[in-house]
Image 1 (cartoon, rainbow, N blue to C red):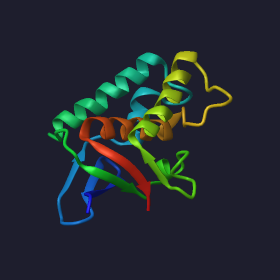
Image 2 (cartoon, rainbow, N blue to C red):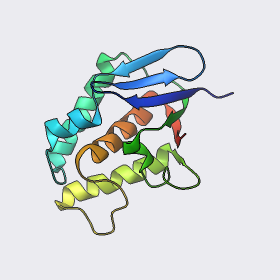
Image 3 (tube, rainbow, N blue to C red):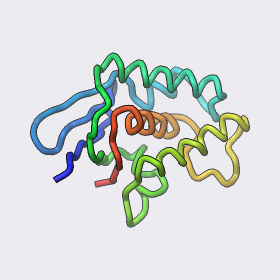
Length: 148
């Protein structure tokens, strides 16, 4: 059975709780803290987006979470289960699909506004949640995320 880890946002941290066993780890960043620090409202600028990525990468390093084959994430977080793919009957996204959603956010940042056809969140905590998810999947080795 592949490893399964529940992703949870609390008031101060992003938590990774293994659903089998009792192992848990976390990073000291949340979608709300990230959005409040880097973009209060509206679509982030490219510089704000890059600084937010740096903050997540720094939190990952401080959390001493090394890249490994970690299997799958699961979540019930509203900021994540509203993402296209998690809000459908399939309720699952692979790392490449998360990357494509993030590219929509990056495109909005470079355009300076939310494109009319954007499928990904481009503002506030929902955009920050997508950024955190993307960085965690990329740097920690999670292959998929599902809404459960």
